[in-house]
Image 1 (cartoon, rainbow, N blue to C red):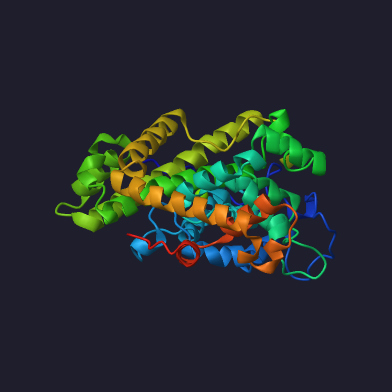
Image 2 (image 1 turned 60 degrees about the vertical axis):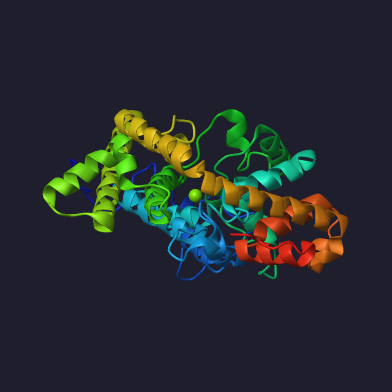
Length: 386
Ligand code: MG
């Protein structure tokens, strides 16, 4: 593993970094805070939100009740923030913005991980569908109710832009109609988001590739030997074992993952630096018209993709995972059908809404795994078999 060139702090951010003083601002103008800049303030608003606290009881891959040591959406988000900050600092990118985006990126996730999201998307197919990235934006734009002057958290454009990581064309058109030239504009015009947003996207992948190996081995569904076919893992397992003869079990796994993470972080720093030097965007706005600039080297991209493919077939598609997946999807479908037929079964703020299917989707998406299970049991009498 080669170390990246050392960071030389010149005291001022590079021209392509996002800067709070040049933010496109908030949807509802607010006076500046006396001691914090706008990106810090966004990060703090996210940490204090209800949706953020719920992440602790939401599944990443393994259902929340399957074990206390598996990642949840909360610990995943913290790991993404850590990785993204580690990369942001040597590149001179705005760390507060990176942290805000990373901590908020999964706020819109349903209970039961991707299983829940797929089921809710099926239920919502006749009503505009359900996308978790768009839902994260809905959470920070309207579903949090904690400020006297506005719904949502009233975050800066740059934070919202980063939260809306992906968006279907149909939804982008809908958003663009409500907010011309806003956060959905780039999906219709092939533009990039800020470097900070690009970084969070990559840090998300680095984080889950690494922690899903850890959780997969912890669950017993993967063995470290199975990972020998994955170059990115095997290389650092061999390196760790050669340097520490006799190292085995969890410590060998941790050392392997640690080296793998460092290698990817250094790779992104070097590849991104090279791309920034080559394209030399004049400012943060010019970044949006450039090709993606926060990236892996070609070799690391291939290795990361191979790992992702391995996890997909050997872990996410493992019969034991798909068994709980089916159960979770049925629970979401049952909840959806029940609330659509009987709005009064929901809290008043959702029951009163005229857009019933969307209100139901918002209510279900906000649930933690355990609340959804209890609610499912209460409404249908079905017992959860796990
Ligand atoms: Mg994520």
